[in-house]
Length: 274
Image 1 (cartoon, rainbow, N blue to C red):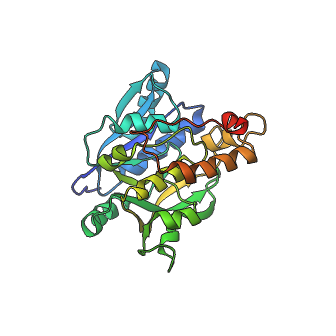
Image 2 (image 1 turned 60 degrees about the vertical axis):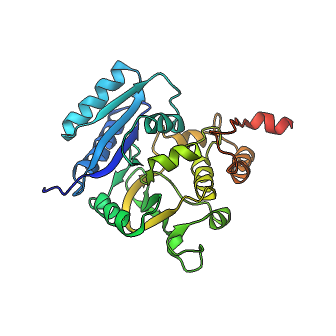
């Protein structure tokens, strides 16, 4: 397949672990969805814990997919938010995109991103995303609400006011300006379940623009076994309804605080005692 010019984007893939063959197959498909892009990102950065076993597994999948990756091994916290923040702190490209190991880009996604870079000059772009179950059955779409008339002040763009009314957006697949992401302080892992939402509120509150590209650009798998949100739903060790409400309410309050300026660490147990 003939490639066009590269786009100044690093694709960041956080890998905490590859549990089994199914995870490896999904990871391979994620990589393949980058390899087949007509417009290529400059780099694929896989961030993972400093484990020789895991690194070997990642390299085997990448070699089988025929794609070159850069590995970022680290001994820092390995939760999703920490991995993304650490990876972003190391990159040199103007933009980055988050690709979850069980998700896929559409074939023309970065071609469309390049076109919207030129036309709109936004600080971040979200893809219209299809949510699928673990059997790859389509469930619904997400991120497209900004194209409904009257949803936000500017058609196609998110703003804080509309986000406070409707929180059903995800950042995976999104393309963010690296400087803007770092300026607002990145993701906050202490706001469990709603860290996506709090980040988008904080990003728009700081006058950075977010646009949804009105073309299907990303496929996001919902409730894969061992995924973060399946862990949150575990009846024994997961997040209960009262705790979920706490994090949702916290997201709507905490976005005023830039973690670079004011370090805050929320815990549900402390909030209950207060």
